[in-house]
Image 1 (cartoon, one colour):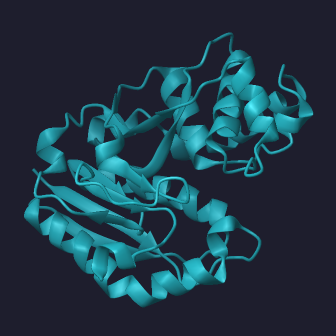
Image 2 (tube, one colour):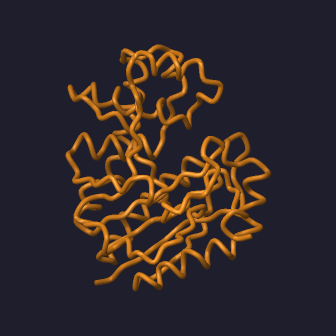
Image 3 (cartoon, helix red, strand yellow):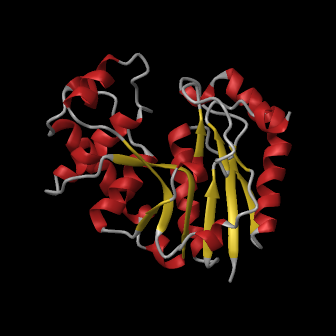
Amino acid sequence: MRRIVYSTFTENLDPGHSSSSDYKLSQFKKYKLQLEKAQRDYATSCGATYVLFKTTTTAYDEIQFNKLFLLEELANDYDEVLYLDFDVVPVTKLNFFDIWNLNSICAYNIEQNVDRDALIGALNHDGFDTMNMYSKTCAKNAMLELDGLSGSKGVINTGVIGGNRESISKLNFINRLDKIKDILQEAIIDNLYPEEIHKHWRDNNEIFITYLIERYGVPFTNIGLPWNFLLDHNHPNISAGGYFLHHVNKDFGKSFE
């Protein structure tokens, strides 16, 4: 059984995106060696190869698509594949490959309350933008509505995603990407969501991979919060229940100092 854990890293991002602030970029540079060691050590403990790919593009959205391209490409050479965002710190001895059945895509699906009250709350929320998970859920569901399908109340966070050769091949992400982009544009024009919602919709890897899984019935397992424990401004504190700490806020000192 050939297994691989991989991540991607760049020292430069185009300005203007929330992930390209000076603070976040400086944190990556400061803790790069510790981040790489934590992921490499975890891969070793799982009996897996580890590769850190350095990206050449500086566009945030393209980097996010490239990590899913790599998921497909690596599945051609390895039996099982686990992707970790470079801001994910494994803090467990549990073997992801043994815990989860990788005959399905394994990731954390974040459920959203998509009723009318939630819509009003999202519109009034100061942080509502292209990265908002509620907005992404609405975009994905609007795309599915064009196919006469009802979507789930969630969107997958791709900071941690695993699968095997068979399950990953069912995504067919690379070949379907251009078509999916067209469907999103159609959904922006023809949907029931107000402009205050759809004006934030952009090509996005999390919207697209969730759409693919739901549209084509790709087997999926929700690994839950412990395996992608999101640390951000709303939930900044580390929990003993988190196995993979996903430092969305890039406050890596909490793991390494």
